[in-house]
Image 1 (tube, rainbow, N blue to C red):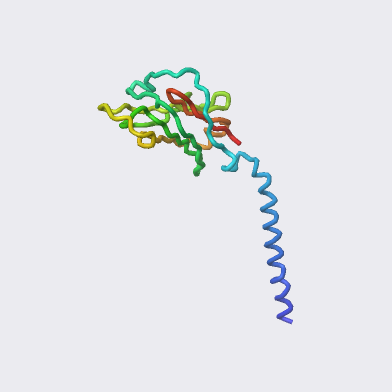
Image 2: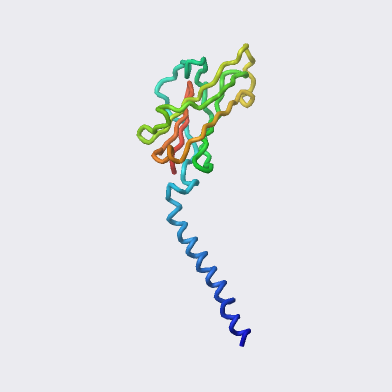
Length: 166
């Protein structure tokens, strides 16, 4: 009798586990389109038109906008995302790269904008290959600040790149 009494709960455990797994997988369909799903945040970046290509300092510290923004990615992390951009200055030796938020991290019409600032070399440097000139910059943006953001744009001197929610 004892063997038969224990056989019932053992058979119910796999069935219960299968039912729980089925419910979890079924619930994923609703999360797929949700803003809570980090894979639903931002897709690949694309070239974006710039209002005007101006070579003015990004701030009063002497930095300028990078000549060209070549890559833009938004990488989900705990509590928000890291906006990462790669820029291509005209020669080697540019440094002190930073993504400067416009409008104090406040999205304008759903767009969060950054300017890619970079300091010129202290001495003339050779142009070199594009790969040897690449400079990266990143900035953390909290979930709170991303809540009303539909698009992120990083602007350089000659172009801008943008990425939008999927």
